[in-house]
Amino acid sequence: MGDSLPFLLFALLVPVALVGSFLYQRHREKLLREWAARVGWTYVGTDRSLVSRWQGQPFGIGSSRNATEVVTGPFAGRQAMSFAYRYTTGSGKNRSTHTFHVVALALPTYLPMVELTPDGLGAKLAKTFGGQDIDFESEAFNDAWRVRAHDPKIAHDIVHPRLMERLLQPDARGMAIRVHGTDVLCWHPGTPDMDRVASRLQVLTALVESVPRFVWLDHGYDPART
Image (cartoon, rainbow, N blue to C red; front, side, top):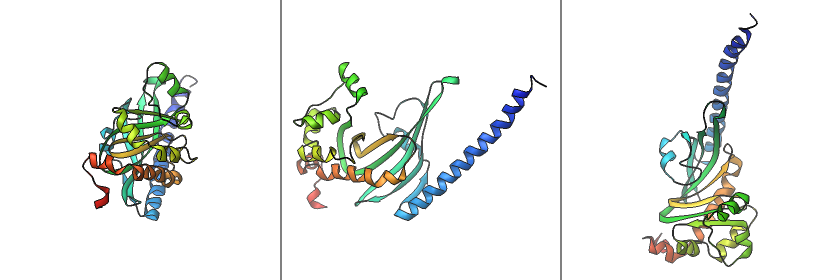
């Protein structure tokens, strides 16, 4: 009996854990549906297409990638979404699940990639080993943000002094932001925090609205005609 006790306990605990996980997910879904209804959005649930929609962190890493808790709707006249993005690394006892809250806002046309991430210890180490960091005329901005882009010119066109000043405000500090194709998105470690969706979308909206007209025109869109 003594030797079989651990196996009996394991056999009992696994179903309990599975039931607990199921109930937690049902509760999360209920809260998300209520949140979406309250703000005029739509609860989607799972959307596999989001897994391969973007490149760069946190996408394209690990295995068992999925996008769940997807909600979509309008924000300041643009289409927006929020979802949980998860992937796993390692195997066996070293297997870990990583979760990020992603918030995205649609752009009116394609723009080249520009990525802005907090200039913390990880960014400084990356730069030490040759990682890109585009410098700007604001020392305060350079100290707070690391900027990457395939084309440094587009980074300088988009990240102009007015946007730099906006991104130094408290609500933008610590965000990780990427202009990518027809979207601008941000991501944060952890499960979706719906109380912060609006504030994060406000920062993304400020970025979109600050893009100079000549940049839009260069990419086939005229904001003066909308």
